[in-house]
Length: 308
Image (cartoon, rainbow, N blue to C red):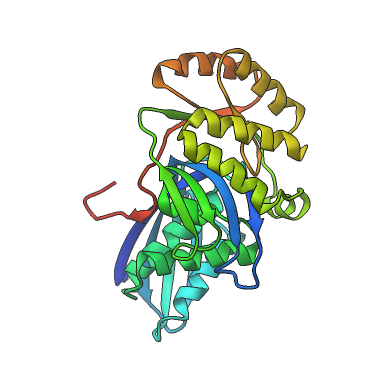
C-alpha cells in the first residue's frame, strides 16, 4: 500500500527581529489598535522565522510548532491564525513552524516577533492581499488582547533603535528610528518573567515623563544615553533581582553602560565588536546565558524563496 502525501497549496516564510524595551509608558485606549506604549528599545537580528504550509481541508485546523516541538500554549499565534482564517471563505489546515533564535520569556519580545512573522507569512500563504501595515495591525491586536505586550510589534515592524513617539499599532502609532551600525547587543539571560504579571503589577510612569526621556535619546541619538535612561528607569521599578544588579555593577565598573530588559530578569548592553572578549570574560562569573546579536535596522519582512 502506497501512502500518498498531499503537497501543500502554498508555503510562505517571514521574519521578525526580537526587541528589547529599555523604557516605556502605557498608552491606554478602549481600542486595541490605539492602545500601546511610548518609549524606546532596540531590535536585534536574532529573532523569529515563521513558516506556514497551507493545505486543503474539509474544516479549518492548525498545528503550531516552536523549534520543532508541538505546542498548545501559543495563545498569541492562535489569535493571529483565527483572525486570518476569518478573512477567507475556504477551509484550510495550517502547519505553522516558529524558529525562535533567542530564549523565550526573557524580555526579548518573542511573542511579538512570533505574531508579526506569522501575520506576514499567513497573508502571503493565503494570498489575502493585505498590506504589511494591515498584517502587522493584527499582530499588534494579538499582543494587546493576550496581554503579552504593548509596543513590541510596532518596534519590531520598524527595526533599529526605535523611539515610539505615539502609541498604537503600526499605521497608527508613530516612531523615530535611529539606525545603529557596527555594534553588537550582548544579552545576559538569568530567568524568565511572566509579561502579563509585569504589565499589570509594575508601576506606570506618566506619558509626559516618558516623553521627556525619549527627547533626550532623540537629541543625542546616542546608545549610551539610551542605556543610561533605561538603567535609571529599570532601577525605579524595583523588580530587578540581586544577580542582575550585581552584573550591571560589574559591567559599569568595566566601562559598559547597561540596563535590564523589560520584561525579564535579563541584562543587556550595546558594545563594539572589539569589546566582546571582555563581555565574554565577565559572563563567566555569572549564572546567566549570554547571547550576542547584531542590531536589526530594517524590521520584519517576508523571506523570499532564495533567502535563508
